[in-house]
Amino acid sequence: MPTGGERTTGTRCGSITELARERVYTMTPLKRYFAALLLILLIGLWPLISVSVAGAVADANGCGLDEGSIHPCVILGHDFGELLYAMEVLGWAGLVTMPIATLLFWVWVLMLVLHLVRRRKRAGR
Image (cartoon, helix red, strand yellow):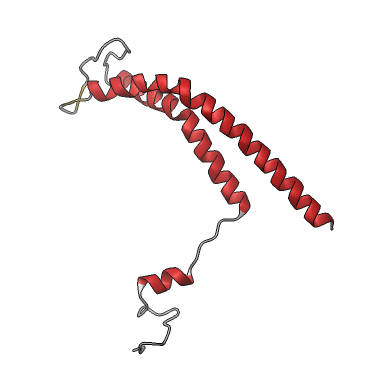
């Protein structure tokens, strides 16, 4: 048993916080750029994904789906018409999210190019 001042590296006696401190995860620049790109794509494509899923669910269950009104869509005894309608109308958010994602994408490209140029200059020294 460890006493107050001893560390318990690699044993099951250590606390969760001690184990977390020992195993610090750091992201490499490449992983950061990849994560940022995925987030940008998710922001831009979320309305399109929502509309596609709503349309697929409605078609698979023989339900009507349009932006004009809510149609009943009973699946497994529950009415999902309102949810599918909301998901369909969310497609209009693409008018905002897609231009924002496009701008963020070009900022991402600029940051990546600047990072690569700076890294190449450092390697050339």
